[in-house]
Length: 268
Image 1: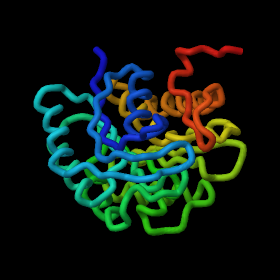
Image 2: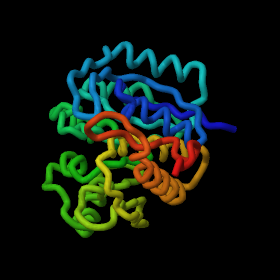
Image 3: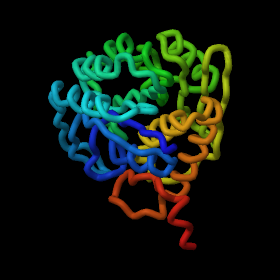
Image 4: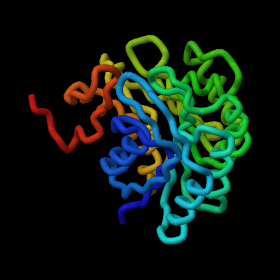
């Protein structure tokens, strides 16, 4: 059976990140994509122009409409924006028995802040203890912990452990911001640790990588894959999507990854 995967995130009108990236990644990895839109953003590959947050009753009603009618096999949570939205989403998902993957979206690729500073505490206190997996990058991990950004793998391990102590079932800390020829991610669940490494791809087209990875993880977990296997497969998928990104010609800034690289083939 094809799993029903719910993405709760903001809309990116340029199609590279947010809900649009999630729908592509969920579809490419064998899921049926559903969406709850938390915000409308006017953005392109060069930056965010404006953000309009959805009213809390509308967010709550979107979640309720889906839960009242459709079985949800996994959830991906992305951009939330404010403490009020964090709490609204947490309340809307209360009692739901399926994997929940949280991508703590805080800052857009171009540097625009997408989560209010005062909302970070709500994210830590209300959502982290309820999720199956959280997938911060290094700046997001530093923001969650109120610490300097990790600069090496030992510091990554310490910060991943510190985030795990906040209550999520598991942490996948993404090390793409480190220097070096490889991009290391660390999955920690309980005492188990799994390093996932891939060659670093030289491209400017990395818009939506975090959204894509987290929604892929939710889809694979919704399909019933165990977490280590889901993490390995999701890492392989996002690496291939980045490697194929230059086959697209979208914008003049940080373009999107190629979500459907496996379906379109290599024209060369």
